Length: 321
Length: 278
Image (cartoon, rainbow over all chains, first blue to last red; front, top):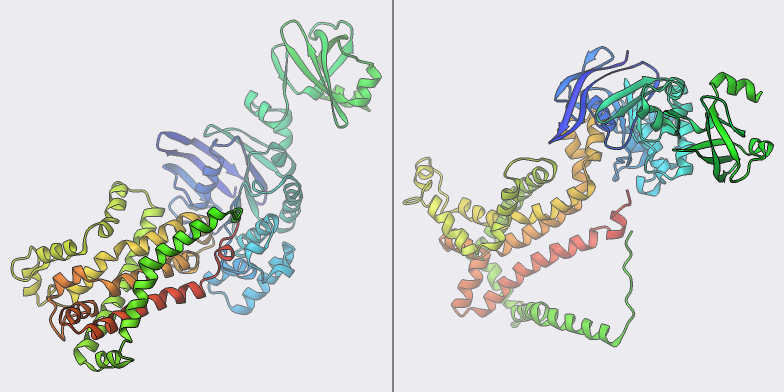
């Protein structure tokens, strides 16, 4: 295991940011710390980097006890949400910063910086100042700067949080490809479950200063440990007494059998290729998602009497092929 | 970026502008101009005569030395205290913050008297001990520097604090995570970022130090050719009806201060260029 966090606690005044957190982060993987704002995930990342000190617990990086090491001795790369670019230095000097600090020979620095600028597609911007770059370009520069020192682990704190939606999606794909290329152990913090599900090999869900669940995106999505993880990772609706995903539900006209909920269609909303239907039963409103074609095949209309039941995953699969 | 919105030019706008210009003219520009004119009332004769008078030259030299020493001290401590105030949390911070403005609100004469009470060689609280150790403060160079440092204390701090607050500490954290020590972080990242705040603080501090009168008058003893500074020369000459010499010396003092401020305005990059969006 690359990063071993054991029994870490941290409070800010009365606020408990982390409460006895223990996590193992595997080597060479892309791990997401996912959770709502204020849940403690950024604090955990900053404790790994040494930018914040844990009150209790230990942090081990690649077998070295880093609990009492200052940030500059941990050999971690850190990327900030707001880039933290050195505004008075050119892109090239920003990327070279860590190498200059380490007094590497000039030709070596030059070669390494060229290599990294090519990796992040910023070769032609090498002599610009950060203020002359777009947000996405600045963040790529920050990433190259962090990678320059060949860190043991790369830590990214909401790296795409300050970017607009299109650039965010683009950089997300790019980060995944970059990681497949560079293979450095990477941990990134995000509150966007889609981002985590799409990019990460492994996800650590953190809420209220505690770890709710650790697992692969499939694990978390299909086998959430509790209602919180279920709700946080995707849309949910209540069917009878259980939380279910709206797209795991089926609607059949007329009254259903045991285990289904009968009701009246009270709302049909089209969202692109999908349709969201609300079925109002005796004591609850169930939301169902289905492809538009299915709606047309069923011939559902407002006020139709229907029943809703959940299909098991395998049934959904065979039913649609 | 906030762009200055140009107000519609109505007659009232011009009236307001005229008022401001007249105010500045009557309060600052015209009196200063008159000092210059009086300094050259007899051509360059007065200027030449003060520059040939060894005592006046000594006073000018002393003023420059004292100003440079106190600027150096105030810059180092000013940047240090600004970092302390912005980057750290500690008990008593608000009290310290309030105390730092004290030198601006207390009359310099009071500062001089206070220093006398502490460092006076015969009856002072701390002075006799220092004197026995062979270190004279009052009526000598160290006392003049201390008085000047005291009155100009907040200037660097008040220029640097807002700049430090604006840049935030993420750049510093990034430098640390890239392997920089505290000193490397300061010299490579923090100092370049606050450079213009420091320069402006230094200029204000220099101008204030060159012109200090009240506190220095009390602690220096005003000994001709020894502890008499340029501002004291101006007063002395004025009281002795050497108006020409007084104006000439005053002109030199004002010239240095104005020249430094103008130099900074000229070389400082325009505000819009130096402030980048994050």
